[in-house]
Image (cartoon, rainbow, N blue to C red; front, top):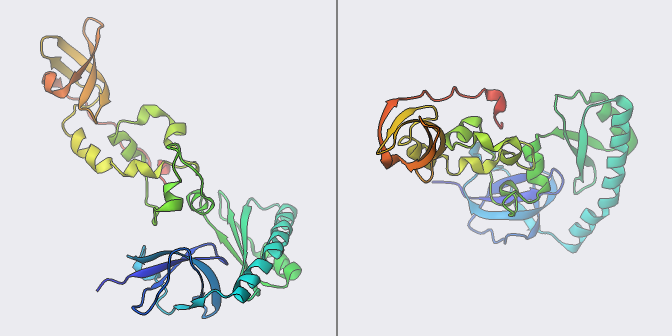
Length: 287
C-alpha cells in the first residue's frame, strides 16, 4: 500500500517535512500547525500539500505527526523570533567577513522553543564553518545549525517568476528537482538559443527543458541531422543547416546558394547522413 503524506514547510529549517497522512488527520493546505520533528521536539510549520505521494520515500518522517493546529500562543512565539532572526543574520554576516569565508547567508530561522538557530547559505565551494559555529554560539547563546544548499534550492525557497511570466515551477508545484543536462537542449535543437535564454533565475538550465524532451526524441528520429546532404524533390541537392523538430521541417542550403525550408516529406533521400554531435560534458548539467 502506497503511503500518502502531508508536506509541511518547517519555519525553523525552511524545508519541506513529509509526514504520514493518517485517516483521522484533518488538515487543510495553508493551515498553520505544530508537529513533532526528527528530534521529537515541537516545531511550527505551514501545510503545503495533503495526500500526495512522497517525494522521497526514505525521507518520510514516520515517527512524526501533527500535534495540533497552531494556537495564538504558538504564533506569538513565532512572531517573537522575527527580530532575533534579523539580529542573528547581521551577526553572522559580520563574523563571515571577519573570518574571510566565501559564503552567502540568506535565511535564518529559530526553532519554536527558541533554543536552536538555523542558518542557510550558498557557496561555490565546500566551506569549513567550524569557527563560524563557535563564534555564533558564543554570541547568540544558542545551538547553531548551518546548512549549505545549491542555487536551484535557493531559487525554490525564495521564489520568483520565470521567463514565461509564471511563478517558478520549483517554487509552486515541482516537488523534486531533477537533473537537467545539455543533451536535452541538443535533442530539442535549442543549442543556438544561448545560455541566457536557456538558464533560469538560479543560473542553471531551465527545469522546463525536461518536460517535452521525450516527445522531441520521438520526433527527432524522423529528422536528418544538421550537416546531412539530402536531395529535395524538384530542387536538387543541399545541406541541412537548421532543424524545426516540432514542425518536422528543415532548412537546407542548396548547391546554387539558395536557402529553402521544407518538410521532411519533401526530402527525396538522404545522400550522406551526418553524425550527431558528441554528448556534452557532465559539467554542463544541473545537479
